[in-house]
Image (cartoon, rainbow, N blue to C red; front, side):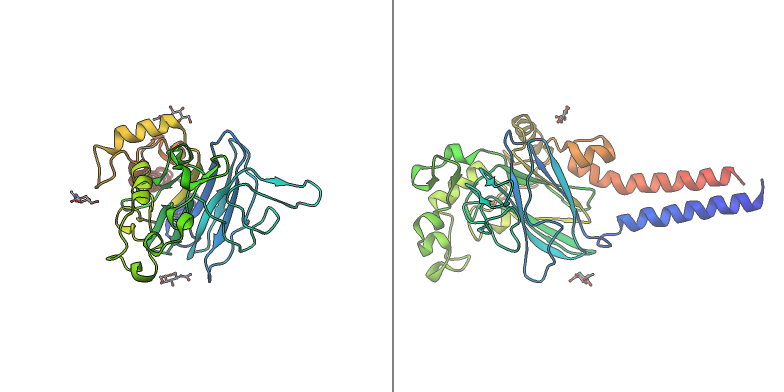
Length: 316
Ligand SMILES: *[C@@H]1O[C@H](CO)[C@@H](O)[C@H](O)[C@H]1NC(C)=O
Ligand SMILES: *[C@@H]1O[C@H](CO)[C@@H](O)[C@H](O)[C@H]1NC(C)=O
Ligand SMILES: *[C@@H]1O[C@H](CO)[C@@H](O)[C@H](O)[C@H]1NC(C)=O
């Protein structure tokens, strides 16, 4: 064959490979986040970057039922996502507020303001070229069911979150309004014992309470009190993350079924790996298991690299 043609075929292949692999190098562009609303009602997500991290493209937006929106984080980023419910924003002035998760800006963007508790929080520390840390926290209470599912990463990369509708199980003394949110014991009673403050400010002195244990039983992978790290912080390298409000009940069932077999530890009745993580992982592998798809992704790259090299040699 024409040597110029074959040379350019190799050149094109190598260029494509370079482009593809740079996508896969952790940290070149940070993590991708996709926020998904599976609730039967609109959710107004809020995003707060921690001090020193730049803001994402939005700090607050409207997400109708079934809708999703994606963000790309900078290489190193830490911050939190939450959902606001029961919001009304004036279509003309844009002013308004929310029943839960409100961030006191009187508008749809949260502009660096935090969520007013009680709010279910998804917290992330994205580290370029190294392990990310993520968790779903009920330390500031609960307002919406939420799950975080990594995809395409390397490591244990378990899903975490709280699928259970804790609002329905919320004890009267923690209930907000007509049951649209559930306070943490710290917020409801303000005592050092529940808040892990004062004499109780160390992991040794601040123990799970009756209330935090109730949260933990309902949502085993979520932070139920400040020092719940051991069973609530998860790691993954180079992943993208789907954050879903109101993951479905059928998903919850499959989570229970699958999480028992490959169980790491203590994660039974999980808020689930093996959860129907449709979305991103299905796009890449047609598989609903996050763990599988994360190992499958580099493999797919290698296979496609080899096959494209092979193809280009056919032209020689
Ligand atoms: C991100 O953080 C890691 C670890 O702290 C550091 O090595 C790296 O240089 C940082 N990257 C950027 C782009 O700031
Ligand atoms: C799992 O974790 C629990 C505490 O959460 C601990 O008591 C138990 O020993 C652990 N089991 C294994 C197999 O690591
Ligand atoms: C995952 O959910 C989709 C619809 O959202 C469904 O079609 C599919 O069968 C589900 N897969 C599993 C394994 O439950």
